[in-house]
Image 1 (cartoon, helix red, strand yellow):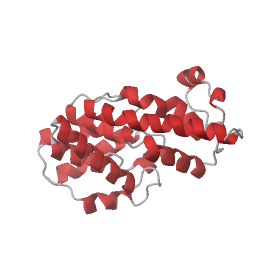
Image 2 (cartoon, one colour):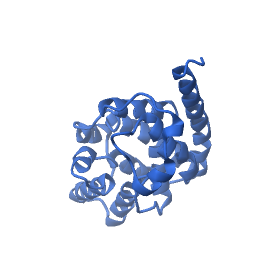
Image 3 (cartoon, helix red, strand yellow):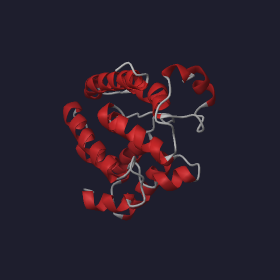
Image 4 (cartoon, rainbow, N blue to C red):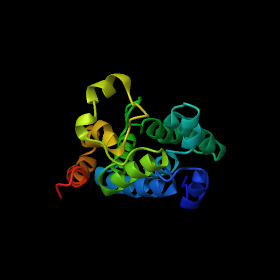
Length: 212
């Protein structure tokens, strides 16, 4: 079955600016691009991309895994519309497996395509903009020294919401996305986006310190 953009748009009315329908549309465009190159099933990828963050705001506010929440909602929605069971499993696995910091790992090509497309939207120019949009919405400082980011502590204890900044997000997540992608096309696209981020944060650090 084919899910339309207008069908999906209605599902994200309560989303924040970092995970709103604009994000969904960007992930869809990237997922379709990667799927063409990698010869993945376009319809599975399309449905998973359009539904992958459904209910995210509610799930996060209640401490639930938003990917599992979206997968459960997608399963019910697709079952109600008579989609084939195997197709539903393929779509919902891709949704459930799209998170960077949680299991399950994407086990199918279509799930890997969605994972890569979603993570590519977190890096490069758009990724930087999203990090600062999120930081502003949550009262984060604009800047912190990269030397102040204790990656080893983060690996054990996770985020400290009182200290987190976009620079922390870059060090603990965004800078590591390139190495975590699955598809050859996703990895190729990530190279340029990663270089752009590195240069941006070097430049920002220099400007903050009056060197430029």
